[in-house]
Amino acid sequence: MRKFLHFALNRVVITGFLVALQIGFFLLELLRWGNYYVAIAIALRLLSLGAVVAIILRANDPAVKLAWIVPILLFPLFGGILYLAFGHVFLPGRLRRGWEQTSRHLEENLTQDAKIFASLREEDPGIANQSGYLLEYAKTPVWDRTKAVYYPDGMPYWKQLLEDLEQAQHFIFLEYFILGEGEMWGAVLEILERKVREGVEVRLIYDDVGSVFVLPKNYDQIMEKKGIRCIAFNRIIPFMALILNNRDHRKIAVIDGRVGYTGGINISDEYINRTHPHGGRWKDAGIRIEGEAVQNFTVMFLQMWNMVRYTESDYSRYFYRFADRPETAGYVQPYMDAPLDGELVGENVYLNMIGGARKYLYVLTPYLVTDNEVVTALKLAAKRGVDVRIVTPGVPDKKTIYWLTQSNYQPLVEAGVRIYQYTPGFLHSKCVLCDGESAVVGTINFDYRSFYHHFECGVFLYRVDAIQDLLKDMEETFAVSELITEEWCRKKFVKSNVIGPILKLFSPLL
Image (cartoon, rainbow, N blue to C red; front, side, top):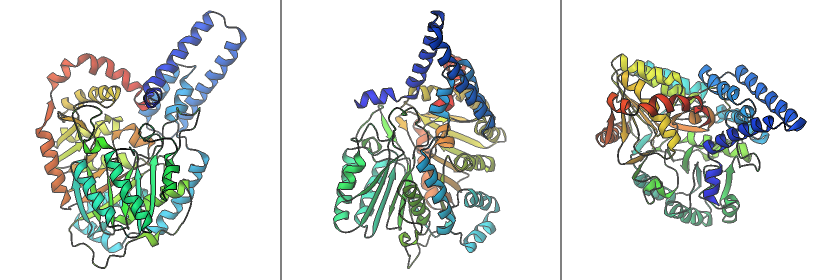
């Protein structure tokens, strides 16, 4: 059943099915299927026309608008349905109202320490501008004296997470896109059940679509019976399963408000290489922070929780009071992005880093399916002499996305960007490093889904020790990856110059 659902909910399968219906309707027209066809065809064409008007009026990137208008005009009968399924920001009214209500609580619960921001501005005005952007548009302050540890693999991340969970005395908040039964989740769950019996408050959020193939039905109810307060975010609605946008793609763990985690690592066995669903090694990255910056993650979690199940507006009782703050250098700023805030925070942070790079810019990303602004910024950085390097997977998790990623190689390589494919297997890390001083580790891919449609999060880092560990990991990743050359691109001429441009027309659907 799960394999069937995995196949049935695949965007390419759904799109192909709608295109087949389009052809079927034309055949029915040829067979003169009477007035029924005429009435249905008129209704569907009006829906497509309405979709085009809505796209034109929306404040989207022009390239995204064109990418949608073209397939709608190509398939006028079912183009409107395609847009409703994949392109429209659709959330149940209850969640949308919850977002509006909880957004008001952000500034009430998170405030910027003026001394910290002034110190950052004195140290580096350019970085302060980036931080100020996050404060203004993500409503998340920057903090100093916060310890950060970078994990280049899922196994050490998991082991440290288990140790921190064992130390929990007051509460545990977990929020993951994918929660899969197996060794990794089993070890976590055993601790959670024990902590509940000890009186620790445990809350869990998992995404209903992200976990649909790896969890039993109504798993949230199973957790509730164990004493774990649980939410399955944005449930799949029967007969509306085409609408797979606006997922909770975040990965957040908060223990007692003292320790916080994020990164690309979900709680499922492939992330610790116990299983190998795509062949080869699974490479990922995570980050652990300890200090007052964890408040940002605490508020992010509670905002998402209150969107679905409103419980409180004052989050301060979940803030840890540090008697002695960690003696560490640098600045740490956890932040979030949402499809309902009217701002492409995730993409804009990356664009600011690309534009501000002076010496080098390194990127780890599983997907390179992005808009023209990011591609142009990367090319321009390389042309002005910045050493731009991007690592993508050597094996695909989704072949269509893999081909689309590869179709973007040639113009970037020709502009001087060095692109690598991770030879040992699938790379799932989402990291950006700029000039050895600033970095982002988080959940945000270089793709339309992360930039436009999903709830995401990350940690912006400046001059913290963990940046050197990230640099070391990136250098080691380059060493085991294949460098993509212009000759390699020419050998993939059909994929790059024929299949690629066609796929790009549909890239917002994928």
